[in-house]
Amino acid sequence: MITPEYNEWWVRRINDNTPKSSQGNSQSVEEHLRVVPSELEIKRQDFERRNANLEKNIEQMEEEKMNLRLDMDVQKLETDKLREGKNKAEEELDSLKIDYKKVTFVNENCRARENFRTVA
View (cartoon, rainbow, N blue to C red):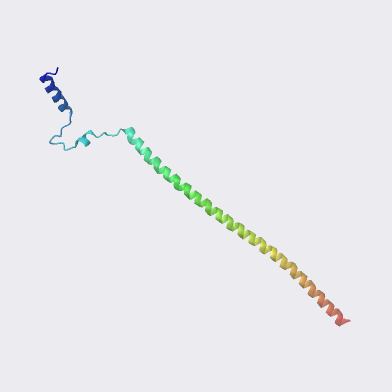
């Protein structure tokens, strides 16, 4: 059985535990009850922020690395293509030199025959 004095004391006790806004303090209940983060929590948040920035930088660097590898592969293909063209041109030049020597030799033989015929 609850006595009226106990009931009054209980209501007063509950009301004493609730924050009341004072005239000089205009904070809301949410601001009054807001939890101030500890130094460890602040450092953890700072670490997570830095970690996120570093991860973003790593992703950008990996993307740049991949692009540079692609550029390198393209340059390598172009170099190989130019090298093949150079080798083919050198082979054709060697072939032309051989043909020129043959033609010159034939011309010299023809002139020598003509000179031999005119002299004879």
